[in-house]
Length: 215
Image 1 (cartoon, rainbow, N blue to C red):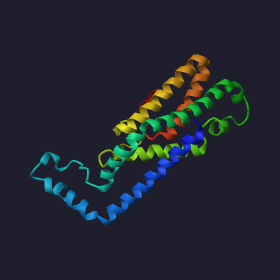
Image 2: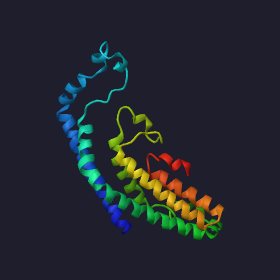
Image 3: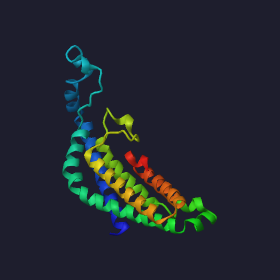
Image 4: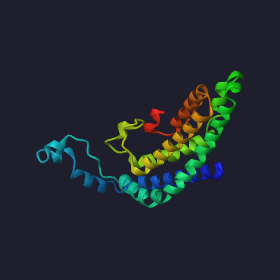
């Protein structure tokens, strides 16, 4: 599978999700009174004196965004998940090839001028892949964010939707396989440097990195 095919897939997915969100925003603007009716039934003033233990907790509000996000997750993301992971691995494997090339030429590259620049350009995800991949992951992560966990964004303790969690686990599995091969083939000094660079690049793309922190 070509790298361009994966980029096209993620780009088109993001464009369609953003169009869907624009439609949701229209519903929320024009039908706001429906949301207000539902939310008035569960606000803190209504709860006081009835369920005191719940009165001061953060309550997730009813919204078209949440309902329609659930519809999107069920009917779009879930059916596409196998293809999403396949395209994901295409991008990650392309990046791994660059990492093995870096490992093969590490001593030579480090002695040459402009080493840091090469790490940022030659031995990294190209800007287009980086931006498209990150935006696609953010679109799926959107469905995991609510009033209760928004402050946990970028924190490895963030509880996420099973769909995003499944994608994240694929990234972690791919990383483990790469590190195992890298460790077996190259000197420890090269392994440490290349593994560190690999992690930095991946963590720039993945909003919630979870157990990638252990590598």
